[in-house]
Image (cartoon, rainbow, N blue to C red; front, top):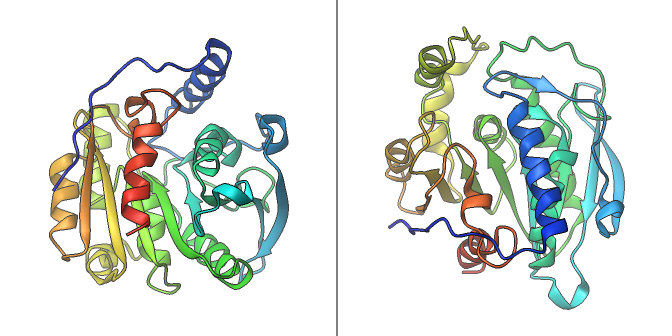
Length: 284
């Protein structure tokens, strides 16, 4: 069963909304659907009055991943940790307004940069690759570190666009309590064909992509698939197909385009209606 949402004007103070919209302009100006890492952070958690710990997590193949561990206020702590696997452009600082909204609602968030992004280790990237298998190793490593070091929490992955592919592969090796995916890729080959048709771009698929569909079926944890009714790249219908693979999968619909759920499901504060549905899902 899906949840509908109307696109209403947010009642956020003007100065805050300007900063949030600026972040979205930066995200969308990256012209994603091709990997476009950014090394410099546009802001840091402390500049948004969030306390955080910076931690370097080392991968099995020797790469250093920069992470931010951001906690909610103790009185709001819902004992649930989200590991953020973002899309294919920018770095984790581009998602700090999302993170702030989540921590203010009680979530602990562990954000990290893939190799080649932000302050993580150098990694040669062809921007025409849809993803790299190494990114799944990165998420696997951070998820493992999170489960080991943040005790007494339900720990899940919050993935966007390319991050949903990364999460699908990572969760074959490192288990999570749940997976939330927005703009979830159902079939990488079909996704590449859509990018060619809509963007005129020839995207490269890495080795092992033929295993994706079978591995998507093998994810046992509960899943919430967030789908935009105007998303031409990862459609509501494709999310419904993923949901039908197992009984413990749900759909959350929003009225926007690809990965616009937070901004379209805003009523009184940034992403408040979006987070309300995440809380329903994660606190069952």
